[in-house]
Image (cartoon, rainbow, N blue to C red; front, side, top):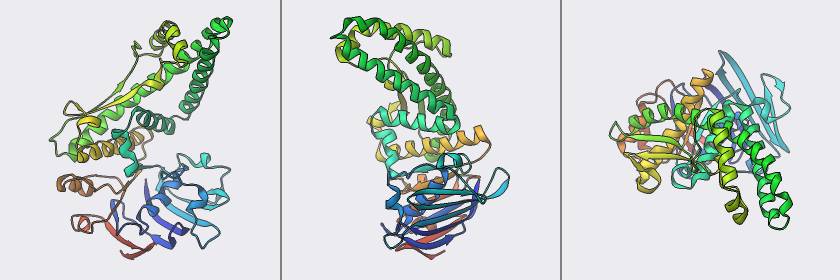
Length: 365
């Protein structure tokens, strides 16, 4: 999947700009607050997802304009395609000249993976961010997974309410069976899907990290169950969960929360056998997060045969020259967009295009 042309009008600080990137590495460089990240953000919105900067739609429109207009020409699924987006009161998409009823309808048409400094939380923060990463990645590949996750969360919420009420109404105790049955049913599928995804992601992310570190460091990820849930197939996991939920009732009533299930699990990330969160350097943690995001792109290609466009925001910071060289010159057969402040990065680019940005304008290309 490759972008051939991007047109941006009245989007954040970009009044009007057109870029025609190459099929390989494209660097957008310049000082801070010049619009580099805005350019990546405009591309990302064509996935149908919300801004990775958690911005409201109204914040995406230039101060002096009533609405923003974006257009993307790209090659995907063996044909030339066009997506356009108008942001005014909400977002309106058009795919190949046909208006779309909602953003969800264009999901999967244009594929991209975004890395920004906020994604360092995958390594540095607690398990919630890593679970969110897994659930979002799987949902993009398998929309039914998102439905399963929603039903699981509802069942856990219902059980938690019961746990709090049982202290005052002991007759409610027997109704726990119903919700534990549902939790085990949905949770067994969530765990099965997560294990399968992590096994696939591990293959690609480990290879990518080896390239980034020039083979000097070993990168490992695995799915970490925080409760002793047994089995790998759905039926075994289901039976184990039911038993564990039953056994945990007394303690769960005291705490008023469900202690067993995938909502407590984690993604273990290790570098040379040590936890990256606790023992990794800044450069190693950034490399680990990058390997996960690029690995996500590789899984998408393995699943759909389409290579997602890689959007790498401020990726060069805290990486040594060797790691920067890998990002610039050894990511093969992908279209990549990289933002950076240091113009020296352009000098190290062997093949590709560079765009200098200032005050929302491309001044050198």
